[in-house]
Image 1 (cartoon, rainbow, N blue to C red):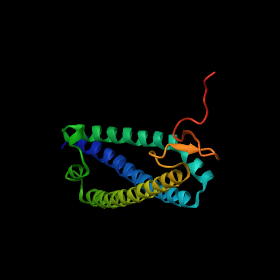
Image 2 (cartoon, rainbow, N blue to C red; image 1 turned 30 degrees about the horizontal axis):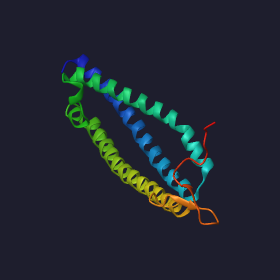
Image 3 (cartoon, rainbow, N blue to C red; image 1 turned 135 degrees about the vertical axis):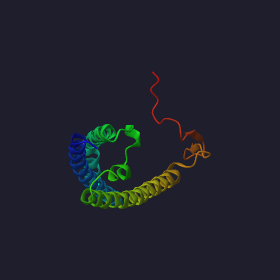
Image 4 (cartoon, rainbow, N blue to C red; image 1 turned 120 degrees about the vertical axis):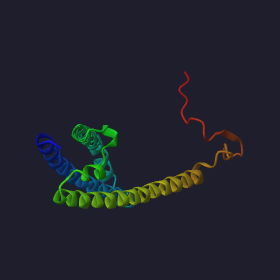
Length: 173
């Protein structure tokens, strides 16, 4: 590797390390948000849920920026390592680093893997809670308005009135 390539590798490696730190913090924030979401659903804290909903567009934009930055870093490494961008991964990058940077990269890689495993568990727990809420709400509604096969209501005189699952208001003139 030439001196210029080594210099570029060092520069891009420093950028990668900073990016991995940011990604780690992003995953931690996501874990906190999932915990907050579950707590808010359980407590029925509508203001907190609305506040979380309002933040979603900003979070999506930040994720898009992070993904773009990741692609740029992969592109830079692919030029230095002379491979395709889709062949760039942390293990491959580590093969070209000095022992100090390699150890730091492996440490960050392990931390990210652990956080991603935890994120998968937390996401599954959140999804399970939301599905259970959906199931309970459906049961409550069925108890109030009846199941799909129970389509008639009756007047106090025993006459069938209307189908439950039809619109309550008619907009016909």
